[in-house]
Structure formats: structure tokens, C-alpha cells
Image (cartoon, rainbow, N blue to C red; front, top):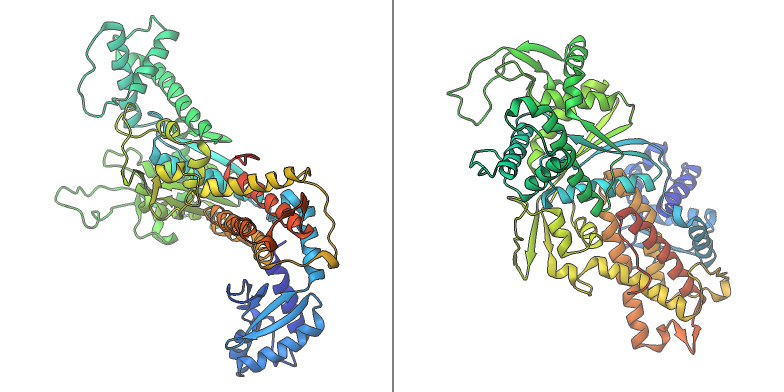
Length: 574
């Protein structure tokens, strides 16, 4: 129920009906027409640039065109009680009281579906995908929450979503990790010193994993690392992934699917993918130039398989083989995305860390080649998170190794605050996470302010001994909104537009921004009631205006839907 789209379509329909009067040729003349919120200083519900757009096409003064449009719409659309021409020719519309009542009733009927547009597309969202070499750290946290909330948003908007985790369980890093566990096992069992070797993992969690393995297999043979590597790798990764899954669970995140890189190797998926792209002449043997901007003195010109990614918008073609002929990381990743393409999604979305920003063009090119441009890959890069406490950078104890773990973060602040605040900025800018602000009970703490709005509404209904879902019937006689109530109504009808834009642009941060703005208007109204008797909600134990209660019900519906998307709880009492 996007009011802005509804009235845009109604206005376009009437203008096309009278196109001869306005000297229009076709529907294309209306492509740039929009309906939006009027500026705050105008006491109207909707605004449109239609006269400005058409004036350029028919070569007339915008105000003359605006007058003509005003006359047409005043007669043809009965929902408007007033149409006002502002500035150089903008049209502002005020909805009639009868129309507002109809809109309010429709919102209330839709409840949990209010804001959803039922797009019905299939998405695969891959996020977190941290190397399974230990617990998650704060750097993973932002991308994890972003991916989860984006999944919730797309589901709310009527789509089918698979949340996927790619397990990088193959390669040198995994061998270093398993070797670290091996030395911890020997340390525990034989009282040997843990070696001071490059690439070993120092964290306490490695000791915990070693203890769990020893408890299960106390007689494990630790004489030859190579002989037990496969068994030890499986056990080490199982425990490491359990750590990661537990961290995700604490953040309120559960993936639908886990895909192992080892599966790519064991099933020869790289060869199959390369052969597929060879048939389409997207892969060929050749030579690459040395990397730009780097020292090329040691560059060895080696013939290898090359993916012609420049055909699909990349800056340069990409090697699929290293100097020794083994596959590059990109080759494995291409095979993984080939598997995803084969599952017939409409969209693939990768949530990447800040250090992967330069990777997006090549993998997007690969998906275009693999799907013959039928499937779109969207890469969303989450920038760094900086922790602050008492105005200074905050460093917690690093028991887990050289990082701040998600578990440590959640010992400082609760899950709800972390989830909300990690979306308090667009994903493409760095985020300052201020512990003091998160723990405050004030307007400066957005999650508290939104939760407090819901708690206040519930307390109001409790004081009236009413259920929040109490049936309230509106009529024209009792429909006299004050300035704050009109502000709230105009904000309420924005909700479907916010969901639509956030969903289409994959920008979930727009949800907490909107909820905070809505809550701010409500709290301002509440405070005004404490100052001025005319704005009191309750007088002598009875509700002052029925319309107030109805509006508060609509706010509660939006808060429930919005916080459901964010995965944040809404307490009824605070």
C-alpha cells in the first residue's frame, strides 16, 4: 500500500485522459513525474513535480500548466480536499478526512503485511563466510548483521531468500590452523612448548579446541602430522565452525545453507566450470601483463588459463592459474558461483568486508559469463567498525588472539543494541560504535528511543485497560487530527515507500533511520501533552481523542514490522 505510487498512478491516469487539453503526445511524457512528501513547512500530504515536467515538454509556463492540472484533478480525483500551487509550479495535495479514514482502516487491516509489496523474487545472500580458523571478530559482525537484516527485509517484501555461508576450508590458512591445533595437542599431552612459528594461531580458543579433541580421542597418535592431517582437519574445522555458529546464534543469525570449498576441489567443479566457459570462448590460454603499480622486476611471464573478464565490464582479464599451474582463489570462487548460478536464483548477493572492495568487478563478471547475463550479482561492501568508549578508541582484552571477538562485544552490550547500531550508518561508510551512547537511556541512543516509543504506547493502552488490538471505529465527526497527529499520519504512510526503496536498493539502514524519525515525532507529541492540556492523551482516566489511539495502533504495527526486520526485540515495559 504505497500511497505515493497509488496517487502517482491516479494522477497519471487522469492526465493521460486529458492529454489533448495539455498538448501531450504519449505516456512517455510522464516518465519523470513523481509524487513525494511536501517540504515540512507546507501543511499538505503529497506533492508532485508534474507541472514542472510537462511545462518543459509543451513549452509553457509551469504555473499555467499547474492551473490546468489542478482543475482536472479537482474534478476527477475526489480524494483531495485541497490542491495548492507552490513556488514555480509544484502541486501540493491535501487528502480529505474521508480518504484519511479509509487509508487508516486499510493499514490496520493489513497489519503484519503493511509495507510489503509481494515482489516474489528468489535471492541467494552469501554473508559472513569467515575463514573457519576461529571465532568471529567485530570486523565480521557488521557484515553478518547487514546480511541477516537484508535477508529479513527481502523476505518481508515478499521474496524467497536463502542465507548462505561459504566455508573456506581449503588451502594454506587451513593447514596453518590445523598445525596450530596439532602443536596445542602436543603441548597439552606431552608438556611441550608451543612453538614460536610464523602463521600459527595463538588464540586461547585453539587450546579449547585441542582439549575437546583430546577428550573425544585421548589416544590420538601425534607422532606424524601428515598422517593424521585429514582426520585432525575435520575435527578442528568442526569445532571451529561450532564456535562461529554459536557467535552467529548470539547475534540472532542462522544460515540456511553451508557450502564447503573442499566440495569444489573433491567434485572437480573448477574443471567443469572452466570447460563450460571455454565452450563460450570466455577462457583462453595466454599471458598477462604484470600488475599495474607494482614492482615487475621479478615478474615471470607464464602461459596460463585466463578468464576474459573485460568482456563483462572488468578492468583487466584474470588469471585462473598460479605460476605452478594450480588454481587461483578466484578460480575456486568462480566454480562456487557456477554452482549458485545453477540453482536458478533471480539475484545473487555477496556481502563483503572492506578488504574485498577490489574483488567485486571480477566476480560480477564471472557471474555474468556463467549465467549468460541472466542473473545479477550484487556485491555490498561493509566498511570498518571503530569501537569507542568515553570518547577514546576502545580495546578489549584479546584473549582470543589478535582481535576483538563477537563474544567479547556481546559481554559489553546486548544483541539488540549491536544489531540496531550496526545499521546506524550506510554499509559503505565507516561506523563508529560508541559504547556509552549504546548504554544511554536517551534520544542519543536510537535503539532505546524506538523501544521506548513502543513501551509508552503499551503503557497508554494499559492505563486505559485496553488491549493494543482493541477495535477502534473512526467516523468523520471524531476525525480532527492536530498538528502532531498529522505529522504522524504523514510519517506512517511513508513506511511502504521506505520498505520499497530499502529493498530495491539493498539498503537496510533506511529501516532504523525511519523508525527513529517516527519515534521522535511520537515522543515530541508525548512531551507536548505534559506541557499543554490541549495535547493530553488521557483526561480524567479517559482517552481525549479516539483518533490518537488509532494512530498509536498504526505506529505499533510499524514498530513491530520494522523491528522484526531488524531482528530487535520490542519490550512492552521499560
